Amino acid sequence: MTSVLWLRRDLRLNDHPALHAAAADGPVLALFVLDPALLGPAGAPRVAFLVRSLRALAADLAGRLVLRAGDPTTVVPQVVREVGAAAVHVSADFAPYGARRDVAVERALGDVPFVRTGSPYAVAPGRVLKADGSPFKVYTPFYRAWSSHGWPAPAGAIANRVEWVNGVDAVDVPPEPSLPDGLELPAAGEAAALAAWRAYRRSGLASYPTDRNRPDLDRTSRMSVYLKWGAIHPRTLLADLGPDDETYRKELGWREFYAAVLHHWPASARTYFQPQLAAMQYADPRSESFTAWQQGRTGYPIVDAGLRQLLGQGWMHNRVRMIVASFLVKDLHVEWTHGARHFMQHLVDADLPSNQHGWQWTAGTGTDAAPYFRIFNPVTQGKKFDPDGDYVRRWVPELRGVPGAAVHTPWTLPEPPAGYPPPIVDHAVERAVSLERYGEIRG
Ligand code: FAD
View (cartoon, protein in one colour):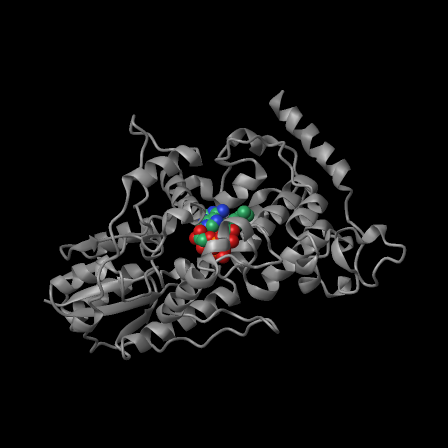
């Protein structure tokens, strides 16, 4: 009997347990639904990258990818009826919207089984628990338990042996939205993901522990955009890691941790994980300083470089994500939710668990055991992680004439660089304000 393989965040054909499950029942129809609820809030770079990923997948399937647009609760049962499918196979989705949507689709399918096999994670969220059965709130013990739980080896390649069917109406891959001038996206699709990973294993992985915090060196793996749409599965990455690659494994562990936290506390996508911090005094986000932050015109070079990298590449280095997030919350006193929304709109790798909890962690409102009063100093951070200033000069053209580390403190130069704003706030003052406000709610 024919099965529908409904693809969502698993746009690949290798290492795909749900494809194995579908193919075991007979012919397979590969379906992707363009769901307005998911596409609406995404910015142009993310939509463009999805469109390119779909094009690559359609080519890998020799054109047999069926694309439909609309609400999956109507579209999926309709395709099932048209093709007379016996089951719908998926990789389970654990994010709040996806999990709710899947329950609704399952209900709409009635007697047709909705089969979940695998997920976008090495270990499905919800599986790694404390000895007493409760979920972890702190990363390090989670990581230990996750590592000892383990995960299966990558599933073998079977796509060539599958009997792919289509034979139902489909829409074309939509056109790409127009992108901001100069924005370049990485190559999309499974083959590009595998090639990028192979190249990184050869030339980047060994120096990951020493270089990963250096935005100027730009030596992280850039796998996040591929993991986002499942062009590659984390199990494939984990299987390639050796005993010396613990640092990289730990970063993948963060992704799994945040997915598990969001699974157990779905409301933490929007609300404070530590609710007492919601009572703090915050600034109005409709302020000029929030606009200056969004545009990368705060007068703090490392902050501005990061925010401009976000607009220019749809991506930002992890260290700089932390610096700009801390600056928004602790220096401008704007709530983390506004910054998280800006990131979700512009990041190509925008991923709800990692983004919302990355923000909450930095804001001091999340899973971090470290207290609220860890506040990043943007100048010290700049000098430490971009020691020669190359990252700043790459993204802030007004500062290209300033040599070396002096680029992190342009206001101290005898002649301030033309066109670059002075700092919009005094870090030392705003740090004290943050601590005072924190003191107020602690009583
Ligand atoms: P590498 O350093 O090469 O890491 C390998 C992989 O490990 C990444 O692809 C990612 O899957 C995972 N990883 C690494 N660091 C983290 C982390 N801190 N948290 C969770 N997973 C991690 N990541 C996203 O994928 N999507 C987001 O929307 C996102 N928003 C973030 C927002 C903030 C405020 C912060 C501080 C972090 C955010 N991150 C997010 C995590 C991290 O910044 C990115 O995963 C990383 O920069 C992606 O680049 P890379 O693939 O080169 O990373």
